[in-house]
Length: 137
Image (cartoon, rainbow, N blue to C red; front, side, top):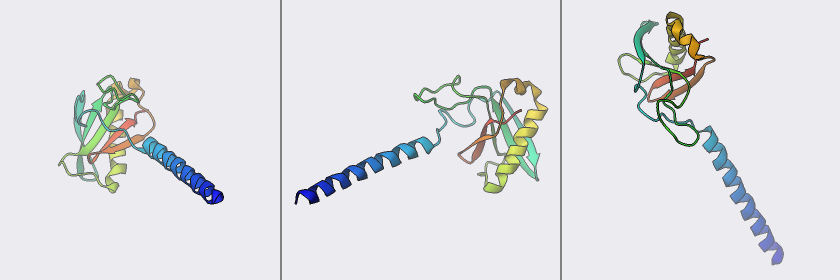
């Protein structure tokens, strides 16, 4: 009888520790959400076309993401470029590559933003819009 209780105790401990690990991993992979609306506090906005579709491009010198401690505000985060369909419909998977091209074209047409060191291609999809936090070379 003691052996059965030990087995149950060890099994319960493993189950609980496994749940904690899964919870911790899922918490790390959950994307941060914007502190404000995606279109808020844009310093510049433009409409560009790609593949016959018009896209609205918005630039923010400081991203609107919450930091690790939950603090939000215009000073939190890296520069961001948001790309959305001009007609207000949600972006679909086929739009992502076009949106990246539009963001790159926007960077090329606005060289003043290059000094903000937006680089790479970090992407977050939020409310049917694509947010590039690191796109300009």
